[in-house]
Image 1: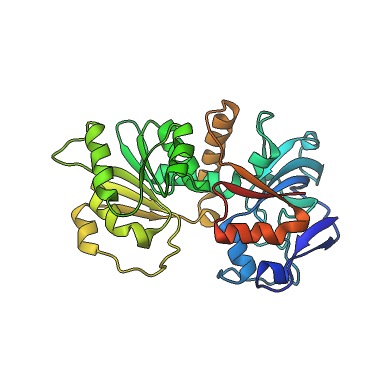
Image 2: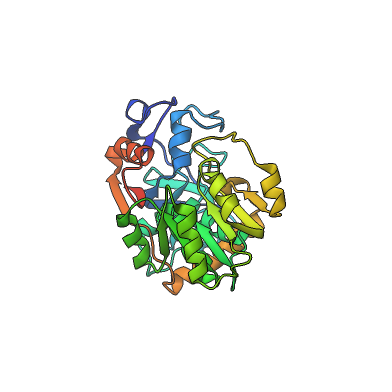
Length: 332
């Protein structure tokens, strides 16, 4: 089968290759999927570049956790009726050398989730890590009727879904964006936003006042954050007493100073999230909710930016440079 792979870690254009490698036959409890599209996440490019603590014990790695396609064949113990089923995939490269940047991928059957007919393979390949992370962010932030939730980076792959999921749970949601173009994307999905940068706290407080928030105790009941270190001061200042903060990244600084007293005064609960180590039982809850929302077309999806498999190096560079607003996928 044709696949992209690397044998050493380093810059995308230096280490990524496209060529023919053997396809894996599915063993008991596994199935094989013919891939239509493969989604790229920041964790994928960090692992390939060597900027990740994940080990690489294999001589050759096919990258990418997420993807979408059609079940090709199944192993013993898997319902044969799954052959021909449209599916989306997640966490395909956990403790494995074979990811979705290939014509076929063989995975445990639980990692292949039925993809509703109304959802394209490009969108299916964009779900995985972003959509599941977003579900946990909204859950840990306590998104519910009557609660105000602040979502940083509301048009990013995770933030775009998280803001919508918080609204679907009944919360009032405010997103932050970097420019008017991003604000327009969020508005089309029904997400109110304010600009980041100087004056963010004042703008967010003005939004709280306009929503009828108690002026004597203003604040966000939940915050969803993509950069813990950079946004920490603003998040503490804007948090309601007994609020919650869910964090899924801190790219500017992985070891920031933490204002313990300020956090304690507000009784803040801070949850740090890494999808790969979250409980399987809760992932099944997330998948159930996500399937319902997809079937009802209740979610808008990030813009998809496709690249051919042969140009996977450019696709990785696009993710690293944040060239696009939305999601980068590789079409097989």
